[in-house]
Amino acid sequence: MKGNFAGRLGRKDGGATVDARGWIFWNEIDPRIQSVRVAATIAQNEGGPDERFGTGWSEPYHRQNGNGSQRQEWRCDVPEERGREFTSGAALAGGVLVSADMIWPWGDDPTVD
Image (cartoon, rainbow, N blue to C red):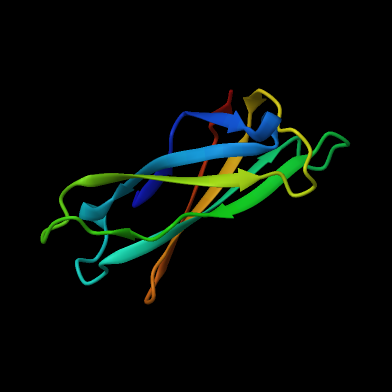
């Protein structure tokens, strides 16, 4: 797994934004890749009347040492697409590490607090 989501994600802006975060595992990424951005999507109650979803992008993250053996925390804001409040509870999360040369998707099921 090249990236992941933290098990619990916070909310801000009155609940309309999830503070998405997790780790980039540089030791699992080709050493030729020196920077990535994270695209994160959070969804709750998919397909129902209380559906909530949104996508956000992180700033670029750069490999911090030559061999890339460290992990690095990433963060990005994920605003709810229609400005509604995310609720506390289970969520589905999809993430993608994006570089100029490759993309690496992953999924997770964090809790939104």
